[in-house]
Amino acid sequence: FLACAVISSLLLLPVTPYPGGRLFHQLIERTRENTSILPGLVKTICLAILCLIASQTSSVSFTIVIAVYVGIAIEQHLFERTRNIARPFTASDIMFSLDSLICFQHSTSCSLALEQALKSFQTLFPVFHMKEPIGYAEKNSLLQLSEDGYGPSVSEVTIKTVSRVSSATPLSLVLSIFRESDVPLLFVFNDDNECQGVLIKDKVLEFLVIKGAEVHVDSSGDDDSEPPKNF
Image (cartoon, rainbow, N blue to C red; front, side, top):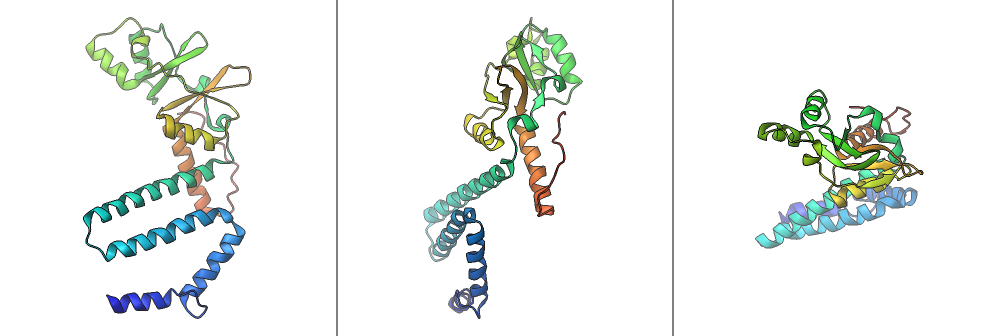
């Protein structure tokens, strides 16, 4: 092990004849071109040092701490990468318009709501009182209600949580809201305080995964394709 460690250390020395030297100069050039990679580089170096220490110790608790740190670091890295992909977009770019969704009034009968829900791929249904959103109903809740006996209206299974954003809200901020508030749906309002549509967490993440794959395949990142507007 000691011999391998010595050879690896020599190869990684930041000196030009060794591979480590070429890698070091490439990292310096990339850092000059894009300073945003510097925090990630520092985290990677710290992680490598911690892993080296962990390999030399038999402490279970220390290994667990390292594993937790690695998990947090990976999750944070993925979140920041996703936010970078989301930066060119706003809420209005990828929201689902109300016309493209099945929406219920709070007084809609449960039997009618379930009938419409079973014909749709939606799993979340915005619920309104007149034009004002009051929450959302889940398909599973409607199915459960049908087994227990129909109630008078869909308001019985409505989750009365209304989280709202403006149509101009950057998508990177929308991601932070989804992450911190633990809500599956956001209502999008225009400048006249009228509800225009909704953002569904799962669909937003699917959109960003697709965009991330496109950026990976096409390094230019030029893509004028329209985001999906319906289910």
